[in-house]
Every structure is written in C-alpha cells, then in structure tokens.
Image (cartoon, rainbow, N blue to C red; front, top):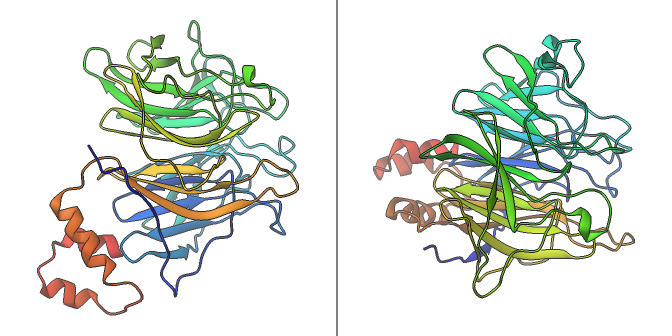
Length: 379
C-alpha cells in the first residue's frame, strides 16, 4: 500500500506556468505530464488553444510549439495518450454548445505535429451503424483498446445528453455506431477506464457523470457501475460493495479518474450542490469501494487527473469555487503515489530534487552511471 502522501509540486523558479483553467485534459508518460486545452472566463480569449508539457524530473513547464491543424474546440474534449501520440476527440468552443466538434485529432509528440483525421469521415448519419460520422459534442469520455480501437461514450450537444457509443478503428480510419442493449443513462463529464477481465477479456467501465442540472438526482450513483465488453459488444451492470467505514462515494461529475493495476481512483468533482476533495478507490476484482485517508488540498471540479506507468497520479487545474462571482480556477499540480514506488524510482526522485534550477547537468548524470531510460525522461 502506498503512503498516500499528497504533494503540491512547486515548479522550478525559472519555469513559465500555464494560466489557471478548467475543462482541460491531461495525459502522461514516465517523464512528462501533457495538458491540452481548457477554459477560463478570466482569460481574454476564454479558450486555451495550447498544449503544455510539464517535465516531472526538472519540474519545468513548456508551452509546446506545434505544427498542423490545432483543434479549435478545446473545452471538455476527451483525450488519450498512446505510445507518443496524443489523441483528442470532440470538445466545445465558446459559447458552450454553439460550436461543438466531432473531429478527431492526433498529435505526434516526437514531431510536435497535429493531424486532422476527420477529413476521411463518412457522410452517413451518426446513429446509422457502420462507417458513420459521429455526433458533435463535448463532455464525452474515450479509451483505446489493445487492438488500437477508440471507444467514445456519452456527452452533450449543450441541449441534449446522449448515451451514444462509437468505435473508431485507427487502422481502417472509420467510425462505427454501436447499439447495445441497456446502455447507461445519457450523461456527460463521466469518465471511462479500460481494464482486462481474466474471464471475459477487455472492457471499459463508466464512472459517474451527470447532466447540467443542479439536481443531485441527475447525477449518477456509484453503488452500481456499468461496463462494455469489447469481445461480446454487450453492456453489463456491476453491483459495488460499500466501504465499511464510509459507505459509497457521493455521486458526481467533473471528477478526476485514473486506473492503475485494475484499481480505479476518483478524486474531487461536483454533485450540483457541493464540490469534493475526497479520494476513493474501486477494486475491479471485487468492486469494493474504499475511501483513502488523504484528501486533495482543496475542493475542486473540472480538473484533470492522469497516472504515469510507474503508478504516480497527477492532478492539475480545475474550478475551486461554486460562487459564480468568484469562479476561481487553479493552475496547481498535485502528486500522489498509488503504489509503493520502486527503489529505482525513489532514487530518481532524490536525484532530480537536487537538479532544480540547474543547467548542463546531463553529462554528470551519465558519468554517475544512471540508466539511459531515466535520462531520457529529462528530454
């Protein structure tokens, strides 16, 4: 079990820092956190059509200069990071719901170049079976399978909420509309996590979500969750078990959510009346909920969470106040190990903590015999 110590990361003194925001999305590898898009009513242009990279080792932010067609609608898009490629679907501009996207963009992080895959979209209606064009919207969630197929579920047009499920083949470059029995209730700002069931294969799970109302009944409970099997194409319902001490987490949307070693972690969020600072885990082997003994530094929603391959969760940004007169956004970044880090990871953290604000240290690290895969994280 990890120590559950939450750390607020202070960027290097010589580092630029992104503007506070909400509605952005994050992805990560072992060396970097990537922050895409976002929104703030206090920003002149409202939308952040930008991609930032936070280097974990040096604690420095960098605004990445990319080429190609950068997405225009960058609020409440959905995002996955797959082997050096940042994949982004949907999103809204301002005013919300008046300029929605159904485009699929891919950014090569090696080349820092964007590609618009929607140029090959079909002209068929969005709910007409195979080779369709998906519905435009925002607040969806997306996962990628081992077979390089994207699954996008739910979302809103700003007027209506849906429970549409689309699958996109990165090999065929086509969308299919999947019509299954008993799908989850329409919703937005839920989260999807993908996991492998030893008996039934790969599937994704739908965690939380709601509608735009402030009525808690329009937020979806976490006593039961639904999953979709890639192999059978069927929806299944799973009854969860409450924490003995704390029961079930309160229903919510706009929360952070990651999965590591078949355990789902949720943090923060909003239920129409209250914001949250709590952190919960759900073991997908037993569907047992547990409340972690630590909380986020403050209540927050519309933030984004990501987890590194080594098991460290990072949380960035979000809305810190419900009061519309304040509407305070964050640009803080928090860190929480979800597992006990290996001795090598602990050693690397100690080494990088001594590098803050220093330059030209890479040759010295090489002389110390530090493995190249760790040095590559600094690039």
